[in-house]
Image (spheres, rainbow, N blue to C red):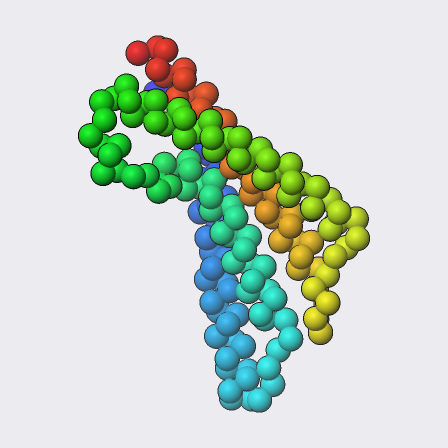
Length: 163
């Protein structure tokens, strides 16, 4: 059996590692509640940090889910199709997904670049550059999804022609 494509391995590793950011965000939220309720000393950074951590994990989770083929599929119809029609559904789905994701990556790439050039910040008390980080993560997440969808489309077509 051949080794999985590089993008599959990268999606899996990033998904596995970045999922821990949700736990970090939960711990930070507990810390915030403790600081506020017990010591009457709320923080100015936990909310923004939690949003940034969860956003990043969520955005890269898309490529992870696509790699594992765990995105939503209407199985009530799909499961009753013949293998050929399932292949056609997968093909159409991946092509449409790629068109959308290419547009998303192009648009978010422009936004991320603009945000980086201006060092866009939240404008709140902490004034952390959260918008810049999230816009960049959105672009990178969309780019990962493009690569993952392109890889799956390639292997879908290749495997159909070899069987």
